[in-house]
Length: 215
Length: 215
DNA sequence: GTCTATACCGTGATAGAC
DNA sequence: GTCTATCACGGTATAGAC
Image (cartoon, rainbow over all chains, first blue to last red; front, side, top):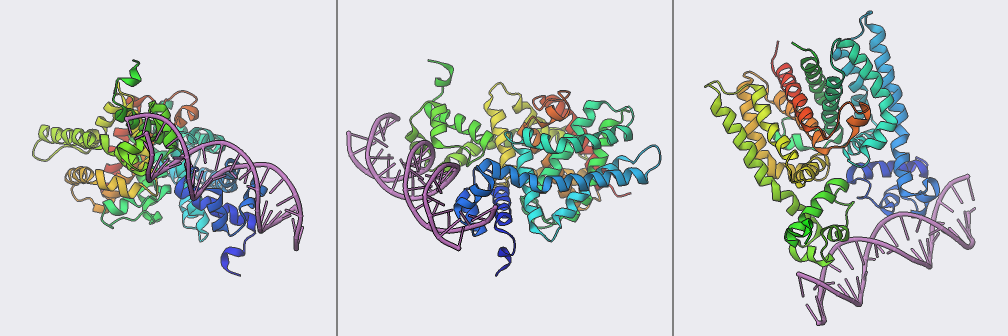
């Protein structure tokens, strides 16, 4: 019995769907391809998950809860470690982003695929609004609240626009497109998550401070 | 003869393909949908453009050249207006981004669709590396050179990672997903390009300066 | 309850006749 | 340029094996 077959068939379907949806998007993948990669019968996907769209949602949901817990925990930890005035902008951004880096470096490659799928969804004019809002906005709102405290006097809309920039930079990092590899002629690598986050965190923090601190 | 039919059939196919590919991605659109929206016969698309993939490339190429010219012109202009030490980081970022804002605000809605398509391609693990590199890297490299001058002593890889963050933030702006509308409860709007760029430019400039200026 | 084999029906891309 | 036939493929339902 090879590695792929240690997991239950149901899990294997989710794993295969996760990877293929992340690579090709919802419409770029057929149920038959997913079944083939999972080494199960075509009909088993419908049996467990119903329609294709429901399988897609199941993939999205599987790790969303875990991610939300990890990121909330990181926020609470950095808040409890700071004094009464609350954590700095940089600490908050760090708490928001580092859990993602940890999972991208997880030995289970499923996490890498999942996060690339999140990038696909976040950037999609069709799925973006609906799915991301539904499952991630409660957490994001808590981070926004923390940022408001760390940036007293900032205009609310400035904070949202800064979050938009953060979200975009993060999304491209999650997508692992390999574009920076080519542009930099190999100097930087899409798969070097450590470098990506080490550069992203101070970059984003500086952006917030510049835009949200009126001269 | 209504508005849609003033343009040649070939152009109408490109217009329809542009809009639909931007919304649903390559696999989410069928040639028949494109033909229907363009009000032409199904087979005319193959007649003019060959395979579906070739139509996709034709859509991508149609405005790429124009965009490259406009952005190069903006760079040269800001360089000629600065002294011998060259333009500031913020001026360079402005030259890189403002031409995009202008086109997003163009009366021809095709530009909005086209730029959303660029967002889709830039974020795709499949198309991203290939298409973007091929047509935009020469221009991007010129901007990177200008940024190196404006940030003397910066490590090359730091500049590339900052560009990566810029590229991600821009991509999400181009995609017009409507997510910020929902998150901010209507305070900010994806379609308010002016606000998006007014916030993006200082945000990105501050990020470059923080990361590329060693203390 | 888990799973497989198969069949149905709609749709899509494309080539070739016109 | 247009119309049409063809053929492959996709999503899904069903019947029944284990």
